[in-house]
Length: 262
Image (cartoon, rainbow, N blue to C red; front, side):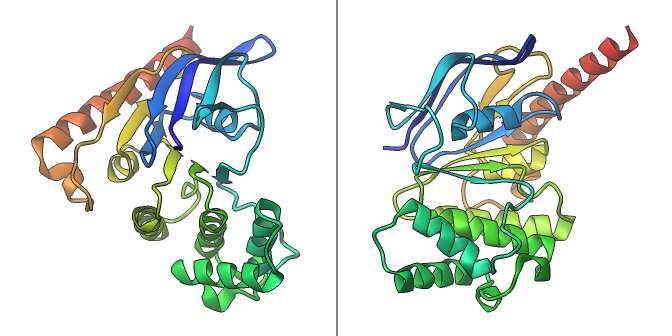
């Protein structure tokens, strides 16, 4: 099972505490959004989940195993696409597949890469370099690579943050479609500072504040799936949740402004 447990996790850079006493769980197949303003430690927590950094205190487990470094049970999609510019789109995915599983033939990797590029509408870009793709296309390629590896846990660090509104909307829908159609149930952690994005995507929203400490709130999103953007505003429960999230983020930002004025 790919249940993820974060137990009393703290993290510091030297004397600067970034995260303090963070605890929550994600069930297998759950979509979790880490929501908060810039600088609150969302990306740092994702790096801890990825095993790229280690907690100063506490521990993180995936499927009952303590995270001690990067592993094949977790794949990561970054905001900057992280495609090798000297390799074609297909070669980038094939390389990741070879690193994840060295027991297959080259032709098999190529077929898997083609299949997943087809799912994101990029089959015709298999032999193109990343420089020949738009930002949205490069991010689709990065998502295809993550799903091709088929790790049970997918970590996404504001993957749509640098995209225009229309492309962002399309990729949100694409991500949800891929996640729903994935066999076995993939657990997703998605970093965002956008409340509407979190409510559209998440089963659970974990709100982090600028002052290091326990999560400011952990909320279940009860809007039925499949969701539309209209659903975020249509019901009283959805409006109540949205207002609560707005209030939490506003109070956090206000506290930061007051600290700067002191």
